Amino acid sequence: MKTEQLIQQIRKKKSFLCIGLDVDLNKIPKHLLETEDPIFEFNKAIIDATHHLCVAYKPNTAFYEAYGLKGWKSLEKTINYINQNHSEIFTIADAKRGDIGNTSSMYAKAFFEDLAFDSVTVAPYMGKDSVEPFLAFKNKHTILLALTSNEGAFDFQTKSVEGRELYKQVLETSKTWKNAENLMYVVGATKAEYFTDIRSIIPDSFLLVPGVGAQGGNLQDVCKYGMNSNVGLLINSSRGIIYASDKKDFAIAAATKAKALQQDMEIILSQQS
Image (cartoon, rainbow, N blue to C red; front, side):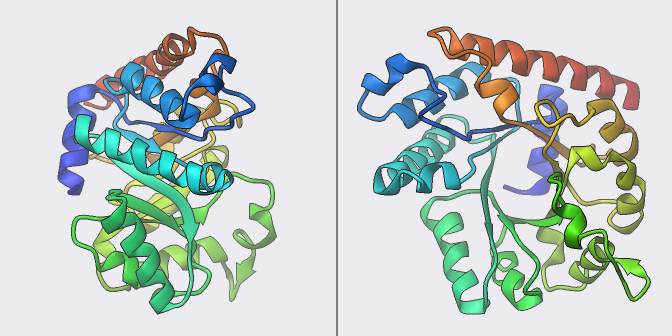
C-alpha cells in the first residue's frame, strides 16, 4: 500500500486507529474454544465489527507463534481475510525482526510476499544492512523501533551517546539508508513529551504509537505534539478494544470501544482542518 492510500483512508474514515490483534486463548470468550480455529474466529468477529472504524490492524506475531503451526495458520487466515475483504486496511506484522542481511531478506519475503502484509516492525540495533533488505520492497513499509513505551526503554534508548540520545541518533541515521522513504517509526504514547523533538528530526514520517489505553498513554497529548499535516499517526489499541468483553457480545463490545476512540479522533481531525 502506498502512503497516499493510507492518508486517504484516514481522511475518509475520520480515524487513525490501529487495532492490535494479540490473541490469547486464555482471554477470549470460552465458547470460541469449541470451534476448529478459535484464534481466527475471534479475529474474524473483531474485524467484521470494527473494520469501518480503523485504518490498520496489527497482529503481534508472538501471539500466533506461541501456538506453533496452528497459530501460524491462524495468522495466515487472518491476514488473508483482511486482504480479501478489506483491502483498504493497512496491515502491520508486529514481528520486531532484525538480523544480518540475508536473514533479513528472508524475513522480508515471509511477511511481504508470502503473507502479503503491508508493513513489518523491525529492530534497528544491527544497523542499515539489517534494515535495508526490508526497505527494498516496493509499496511496503518498514516500521523501525525508535522510542518504545516499556519501562526498559530507558536502559538504552534515551542514553546519551556522544552528546545525543541514542534514539535521536537512530532517527537521524535511518534517514540516510536506501529507500528511507519507506520507513515508519514506533514511538510509545507514554513518551508524549518526546514527540516535539522526534518531529524535528522526522517531520513527515508516519509514527506507529502503542500505549494509548491500557498502558496509560494520552491521545490528546500524542496528537498535540506528534501530528503533522498528513496526520502522520497510527494510534494502536489492543487489549482495550479486543478484550472489552469475554462474553458472546465481545465483538459488539470491541466495536463500542473502537467507536469511542474513533469519535475522539474525528474531533481532533476536525480541529486540525
